[in-house]
Image (cartoon, rainbow, N blue to C red):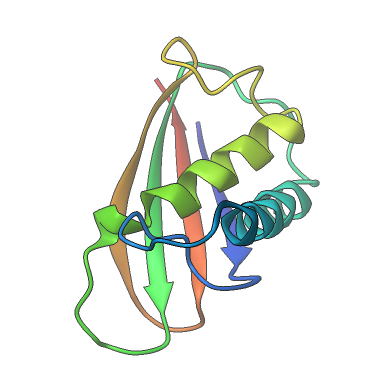
Length: 116
């Protein structure tokens, strides 16, 4: 079974190369986590383990490394756990997220979740 969850970007991306103050980063993590929680309210619990692929969509065609946006995907997966889709995001329940370029379009993260 495959589930797709689209999370519109609520704020700036969390990038592993950024050196923000921890409180500023915590605010962004909270916004992404809450956006993921809100995006999956119409979905029920998933059969685990699952494989998650995160597709990054950006409004510009500039070059970037999708892997550097892993902290954004991590915050969103935490939001899935908060919403009750998964009991935990540990290695027994989740493989990934695997970061991929989605394309040019509205800034959003699309999570494709497949039951293993």
